[in-house]
Image 1: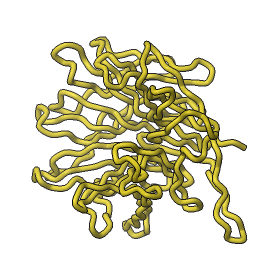
Image 2: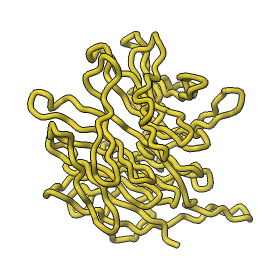
Image 3: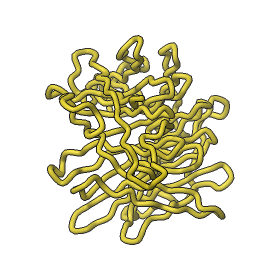
Length: 357
């Protein structure tokens, strides 16, 4: 689940008398390092509290990692081509979705892959005519979504992969490119598409086998959108983007409104901020992502949002004096555990937050 993805224990309790919800506090775990890496980030967490991400993250030889409380951070293998690997999502069977790069002349070309709980790696191939692909999300049935090049790399199409059917092209004729970023346990997909006109604005989509690819609604004043994660209620977390003298974005939550329609809620920003984005959500509607706070436009703060509490800065919900600055939350599971990246001792490390009882 991930790249969006989801799941959880409520981060707050609404008091019957109407007082503000009580903030959930979290214990923080540093997921450590491997191969001497000092820049690590986590992308997904499953309901066992197992985490995936990348170590190094900017190095052509960077390995994807798989972390458990018992074994710590372990590097995941690459395809025989031997290049960098990136892990984006993990399901409750410890199947991990991501990509593996080649070496040398093919170092910029990747293939979508699945790692199993035995750390074996399987290439998912490409759509017909494609030369490279990437996997961004996996559900508990082992269905994977991502994107694959087509037409010798002239475009990218979102796909849904299953072990029985292989890659299914989700994009209808007439669009330019599309990317699948989230898939729920119903096999419904969200992501982003762009029109065939090179100047068309990217838009979030919702796809099912019955409806095909649907354009999700945007709020007035916004013209670009992306769906990042989808839960089993078909709620979708993502972002809207627009222009107000400069490019800005806000985290949003789409919810089905019946009759094929969609409601969309602007989740706002942290106090003082002007932009935010959502990366994942869980099955009780908690959303995570990042927002600025107005103090430094280039420095984001990780947040958790719920209808009970609104948007909360996770830096204010961890023990004081921890030494951490949490930049971005990328995954949340059904226990309310949150994973992402932050700074500790002047290094960027992956973290796991666990709700305190």
